[in-house]
Every structure is written in C-alpha cells, then in structure tokens.
Image 1 (cartoon, rainbow, N blue to C red):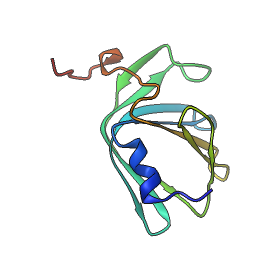
Image 2: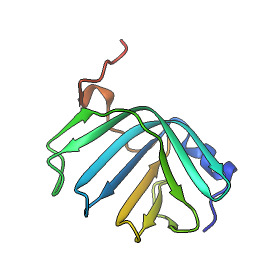
Image 3: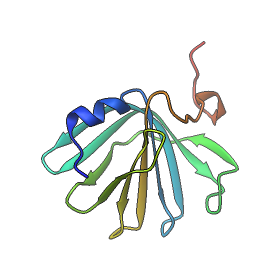
Length: 119
C-alpha cells in the first residue's frame, strides 16, 4: 500500500502510537502535523506520552519530551488494520506504529501524568 499526502490528511488531529519491544518502549501522542518528505513520513506532535510498565502493557502514561517520529517508507510495510487505522511495520528496527484517525481511539490528555491540560 502506498501512503499519499491525501491519505495522511485523514489522520490530522488523530494520534500515533509506536512501540518497540526490543527497546521496551511504547509512546502515544496527538498528531500536530504529518508530512511525506522524499521517502520518509514525518509526524510532529502536540504532545507525546510514554507508557510506563510496557512491556507487557502500560500501567500509566507520563508526559515525554516531544520529538518528531520519522520512518522510512522504503523500509516499512504499510497496511490498513480496520477502523480507519494504518499500521507501519519496521522489522529492521523491531518497531510497529499505528496511525489513528481523528475520530478513532484516543489516549485522553487528562490520563497523561505531567501534561498540562487546557480547560
């Protein structure tokens, strides 16, 4: 499956969750901007949280320093996994990322320890 800028627009305001079992980390954040730059997909975040207790599953989410997520489109497998989600698998680094549409599953900012939530 090819990712196009038009397809990426469906994820504006959605979330990205990425995990790496080898490194033992799980992150989820609200998407601020998605772009395709050459052969890379680049995601910037409004906020980013780290799942504490992963693996096997997070017992809490804590705010994490915001950094962009970048993946080579030449090195990943992309597929639709239902409910409007796209999964990117990067086997060479042991990472999986899932893009959630704006009206899909969300980690609420109020569930992220240390994140200032606007009222």
